[in-house]
Length: 276
Image (cartoon, rainbow, N blue to C red; front, side, top):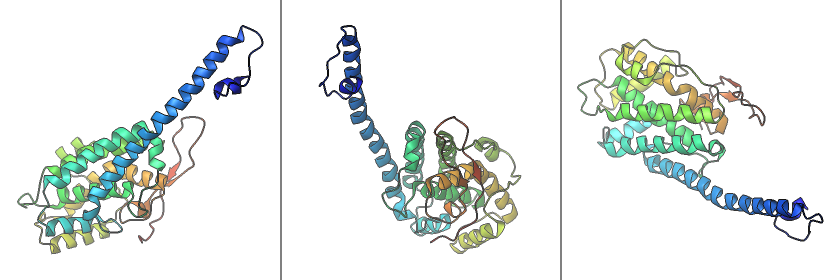
């Protein structure tokens, strides 16, 4: 009787008269489930489409696999290092990502439209590029801009909230305001000093005016990177994205999602894999 009413088949009739009201309620519930299904799936697809649209807009700036240093070289060669047309849409994309993926955490598991263009890698690469430029460029560099901090200000809390909605454990760190307003103290990050020195030399080779002290720039970069690294590496392991430098090539190993309970997922550091 419940199946006949719930799925709106209507082939059975309740014998006792007291069950007629319950039958109508179950039929209404069945119609409500169908209505929710019809409205919910387009909402998910719309959020997924907006995420992939942001990845597509940033695609010409990123290499394959995505690299922050390669992106800096491309926009510097194009004379758009501080162009708001690059950094402002990135901030807006992070804000939209926070709204959709924290409301619908299942979107974190939706595969990308193109296997080599992960949204996690794109987000991590843009944050790495902004952190490198803000920490390494000299104050007199014409390409230095406040847009870099704006991307970090939108991207760091966005990825933190998305990672928390996906079930990843929270990671205590200094806030961006504390990092920007205080002297650099340095932090432990997955990026090594040798990797940073290679990026420093590459940016110097591009003709960028860098800070006089690379040690101070390294401390500034690690302070910024520590604000978003746990979320980026955790989401990279959660979504199982292809390896890319500084992001998914050192993704965390994330345990299986729990169907019952609200305990955070188990997370442990992973080995560095060579990017394809």
